[in-house]
Image 1: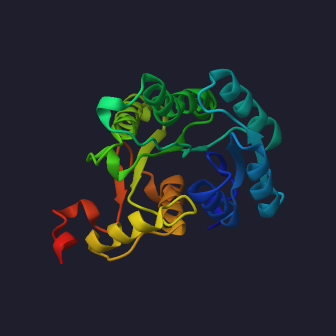
Image 2: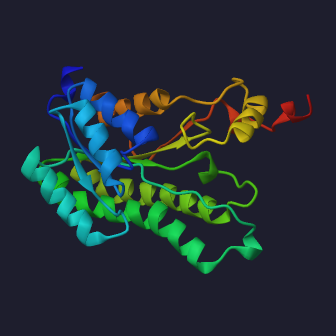
Length: 249
């Protein structure tokens, strides 16, 4: 896909899992990628693995000043960003009634406020250069609730709201904004017992693979999706398509 040779992408949470796979995929198709993660070591490792098309930047997505510096660094190293993938996120597990304000606030700060700050940080260079593509990673939990993840669910619903608001306001500038809502994806952070349960109740009978999310990012970052904005793309093997009837089988 030669159309990616002029793409410059900022990817958060790029030190592992979905973020790392997305960075590899975009670079393989010709894009230049700035990998951002709060974990400096893992981020640098992935960037080194990718090679000259990649650079790394230590970023706390909840810090607006660090966001400004990250965008400035991207411009200096590669040029103004034309793609932003807001992938950084954390999970928190607690019954709602015993969820602390600290846990709730931290989850919202990383998963929701971090997305807001990232979108705001890239707006000016994208507007100045005639547009771009912003891809926010939400979740299947951006549609439905599950046990003991109230803060996470709330944050992922918020990502979808931010996505639609930005798409509505920024379409006039040629900036497209969409969200991807993964189900359970097979990364190092997945609990094997939970993954086994999800496989049983998912129509396709398996968990997803990181490249399957990265391929959707590839589509949304490309001109193949030039008329797509304000949309949510659920990639969950059909889990949200109906009631989980397989649970008792």
